[in-house]
Length: 441
Image 1 (cartoon, rainbow, N blue to C red):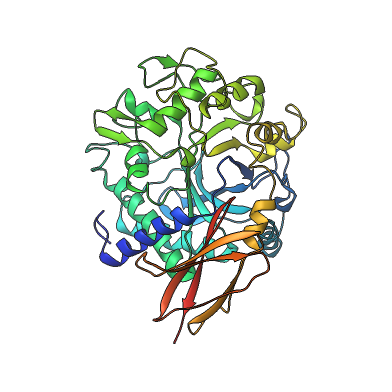
Image 2: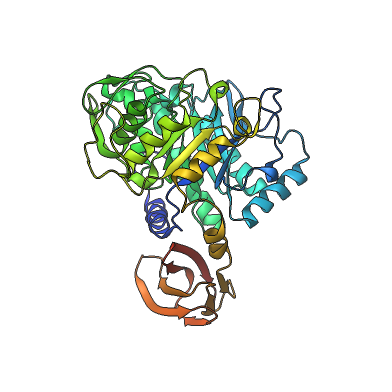
């Protein structure tokens, strides 16, 4: 599995990941929250299937290495049995939610010092994903050599442990697609020093996530930098901004979208729809960086191009970013408790800022799309419960084979030649979704 350059079959899987990402059923403005797999008197345990319906993606915290020297990932549900937990995941998924397994957290150290470490990390991650039926993984590694810059550049890191992490994530995603025929969701939740901190210096923790994000940018679904527990950070204007302010939210978010120079080379920005604003749900949820609702509202509206400039930082793109990816919070449990502000105040704030994204009606329409029989001998039917849809059939090379319009209640019948995995894209006014169809002859 050496080196960072993938072999031909992995390149093909990456191509398909890009295709799937391009077709993914878009919901800009999503609400992502971390869910505690433990009980805390201050932020009590919440049953997974009782999470507020306004949360779109639930990130289960955390899968941890078995020990400081054993990189086998371990996760066991607390509070309920394994079978009950699996049923809770399925309930959320049936309601249009995505459930991801978050790796790392504040207490875990991830070091992939050897190929054995790497293989244990990969196999255990895929085993947990398959066992519980997670929709994706979140990388929230906050300690360890995998997220440190020891030389090289953003595009060509020299840290062997970091390179192994990049390769491991690529392989976990490739394994999932090969087994399930679908893309594994991938999110990152780095601290500011590891991303925007790369503007100040490029070494050790400073810019430590940049090579990882850069190498995996075509597979990423969201980067939700923790805009809390942070020191001051430079904006693109060269001015240092402090956490807890509108300027900090706006400046840090635009830096990730626009990209910036480092002494290790230029970090190219990410599309706005991949960038989420990550904030604590209430004052007690973080050591610092809590931002009141009015300030958050002003900052996010300005970022979206829907409000006036709230502070001294002026957007490089004065039109803003209407397709901003949404918001992330630490955590669902802190948001749920009335011990720290109003219950689900963060979810309510998100609903105010992204009203079109809140709720699940659109996602439920996506879930009701039917492609059958699957597998098929070459002939199959597509049904979409929307007023009008454009249906396109793609082969494994990303070539469009056929396209047609369909109205609500109509059965669209297709026939393809050959065998293997083909893709059905359903485009509606609300967005698009893609489903695999497996042809066996």
